[in-house]
Image 1 (cartoon, rainbow, N blue to C red):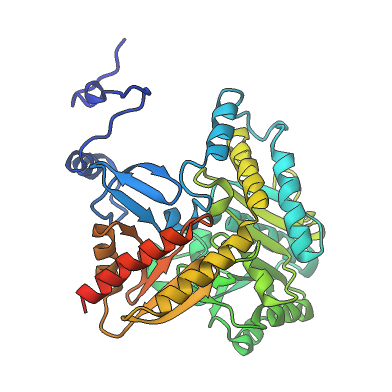
Image 2: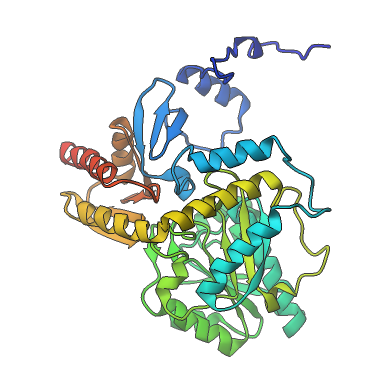
Length: 424
């Protein structure tokens, strides 16, 4: 029995010599997308078909410098050979079994993450694996509520976060996200979430009453505009949480694993020592995976059946993540990110049309001079072969591969400079 193909789509899918589908022209892809894909994205008019390192190629063969990394995901660059080899070998061995059983890779990956986080926090812990940053944060919130109610009674389930934060798009992570414009369409949202101004310790202390089980913060607000926590703030929050018997949850989905020039963004904040840390984006270098780590005493609040996911920590994703960590440790990517970030920040600061550069490591925002439209500048950069995005209406976000070269940084800045001078 043949599968119906009324539009002749399958018949048109000719393959190249490697057995890969040859890409369709952009116009055809746009039409297919409009007809068959839910229209939740405001896509730009380009479709990428191949990547290598910090470079991408589109359906027309045009080359781009990728200084966004799929939103800080491909931190080792595209098609890294170590990750590709690990994926190919695992795909031919075992893809999936479910978490009803042990698999040979998940505990090894948990051990590797625990070693990194024990070094950063001084405390050993345990990890739950998910498929994304939102799901990792969902786990963190559920764990915090379970811990809070077990230790402080049924009313201790509230979570405080910061205005301008972004923690995901599930209903719960949207409720904890401090961006009301993203929440309006989906009311009513789950209750028990409060937002205070980012870096306002007094406001946080006022909000942190006996019903609060946890505070959830990003070391750098990525989607909020690349806003780093000021010196001493996270350490002061840690002290406040200790005073009020609340957990400190740190969202490292965008900042974790070398992006800021340290293994974790909270390490810039002094003696922070979070109770729970979430990571995702860079962990799989493009393979969907997320992780929620908690120090052992907190992790013990979960019992079998309290939380689960079908795909979390499955062999394919775990193989990719183990390969990623191998490369990151061998190359010492935090050091590389710190060095490359300093070079990029210095070059951006010198550009006419850039009023300020903020961020840490290779998670940077170029705040444009008054009158500049970041969206228009990002679009012009795309036309010029540079991928960045308008993280706010007046600021560009740059998050290239942590293995980016000096020559690639210089070439990217030259494209941006040409755009800013042309549009001044």
